[in-house]
View 1: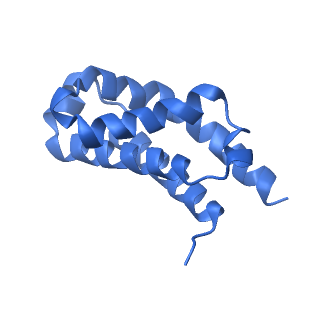
View 2: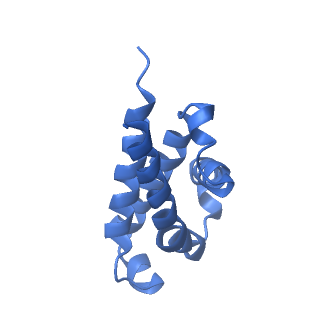
Length: 114
């Protein structure tokens, strides 16, 4: 059974919101000292990348190009090259790029339900 693409978009939004809560008010050092928060952010970044892979091409095209490819590449890096991860790159993605992606994903959800 195929899952509706809007459910994948909801998964993306939920994961981005969780990441926001996990990094809020924390410096890189504070976040990195909390192993559970690091693991949770990594998991939710994978959810974001996987969710983007499952959006229809016409919906994915509504997002800025960097939000189409970069989270998918990061998901693949986390899944396949986990041993080469740089905490500062992950923290930067979580604090700078995910909030912007969340804004665009919410707009996409709002437009798709009109």
